[in-house]
Length: 137
Image (cartoon, rainbow, N blue to C red):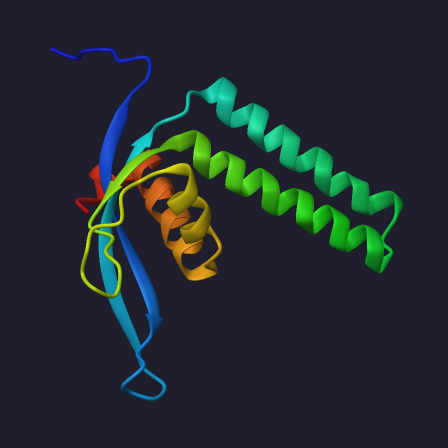
């Protein structure tokens, strides 16, 4: 029996690639888990419409100043979008191997790193991809 859950949340693995400090030119993969809330079509579409509207600002003014402004707005939208769907995490530790709890402060700290943002984005896309199960992944 399928149970419809309007505000579905799920834990999903996140794989972060980062340069290996001990081996020049090599990457190391680390993983942790994030609890996502899966957005419905209306919310997803609204976020995409907001992103599209920001990009249209460049069509009328491609100056370097406007490009920077639009990029800053796109970054802010991306962070807000992540904050909207991320409910919790587990498996993130500091240099002393102590768990870093999920909070607004730690979320902001983690989101400053592009490699982590990219990994979280990939994980969310995997979580919402309908073809993943069909491909047997």
